Length: 174
Image (tube, rainbow, N blue to C red; front, side, top):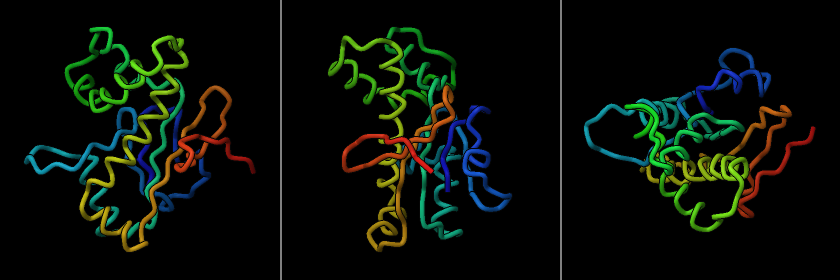
């Protein structure tokens, strides 16, 4: 399973040279996986995760963020009291904690550095959120499911893979 951004410049099938049927893909603004909730509301991404894990028995979930992400830019704009969109603002608000921590820790970052750092941190937050789903945690504990993170640089067409131990995205070399 690949959780990717809705941005048309970041097509998982193209990036991974996949044929139809090789990837189960869910795309949304900023490639966000929300935390597990049982509130009776609509949860498109959560439903896709449940289907992938409990029905398709996927062995990996990859969360793939990307450079120049408009959803991440919207989250950063909200920090300056410029929320964007009735539906976009609350959705990207799932990254508010990461954003606020980043700004507090690195107040002198350039806007481009802050954008990229939040793009990376958003992937890590979504990976953390995946572990809050009981059926995901159960499959991870059993060794049947692995979580991975990636970030695609639109500017140079380079895929970066998350080394979770180091918290760093390393360029993938072929």
